[in-house]
Image (cartoon, rainbow, N blue to C red):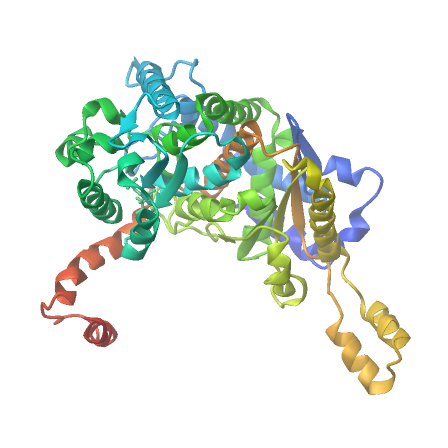
Length: 529
Ligand code: F6P
């Protein structure tokens, strides 16, 4: 805990220091890092050289290098489930990885090959539905079996030249009903995506889809594909093993879109661009493994996160992509970060002596500017902002709009840091003719405290490769934060209690006695059943 105490002591001394005063000619470059063609600028934070060195000492004392090596080499680091954590193997197809004495990559490559062949068959019309070539794909899954592929299909829409992909996750019948209402069952392919093949939302929606398809298609199961670790259960559901794409339990749900869970992405953009997505992630893996901590993008992103959350006590962080096609990235990162590092005990089961991971939220800019940025600029709480922006868009005719987008992104981080003083606000209002008490009152409403931290991640253009880099960057950030906090980032016991209680409430909603339930739950049941 000495490192933490040193960081807290340092923070106490510098907490009120204006970030702007830290800037000399060298700061922007010194507090930035590049990986391939990404640029991560964290100079608009209150981290100085002393603070950075103290943060970097957390990397040494937590023995990050050894733990990183353990993850990549297949050690069972998820030790409440006794599993290895090897999503990185799914995108480094040529590197052998031994688990229990056997190279797991043979099976990984075999499934990747089958996925590729199947995607080609669907995309070229060799695989057909009852009514001909597949026009639409419905991915039924939830959490990690939904958010990643759904996010990536939107992100990579300029590359999409295959069937349209739709995503159904919610057990609310409205979701599947609205999705299927506009589709033709005879040309629709359904992917049932579930690591466990037991998740109640997914299995319920899958049954609904089967009935919908069965009304028009003689052999509905022929237009179903399964993606899972549970082959016995996919068979029981009636899906031909030839169309089952398996993966191992060492791929966590929220880390799984690099393998078969990414089938919808591959169908949408094609195997070549899907492989480009894998290559981008692999290049971030190589950077994470090889770069010195002080020049390591995931390490620095994690340390900025630790500084803001555990040291400055800012409870949330906003992810603000200035890229409409990253609209679902904040939701994806919410699961990645909050399900991974939202834990209250450390690996050894002892209470965490510090806060666990932050609340992660966000929306694309510029939309957020006209909604919640008011609080970010003038609210009483500080929200560290993580901006993202590309140098170039995919609409050459609309380059002027892209410049407007970039200008807005840069303006926000500048405004957050710079703020507007009472003197400046008073001068503006005075120029408008106000004076006396009214001048003061109106000016005070127009003060921006400033000194609000943000980071900016810049990338050339949102290609499959770049998306892979960005997602892998965040995965490794979660890993580094987890290691430093002493958390197992790869289990998710916190989702279980609600599932159990929902199961018990189902018969009560159908009429069984609510005895034993608290007064509020009884009242709600009575109203709702
Ligand atoms: O309930 C949480 C969770 O287990 C997530 O971790 C997971 O991504 C999601 O449910 C879906 O699980 P599955 O892929 O097994 O259906």
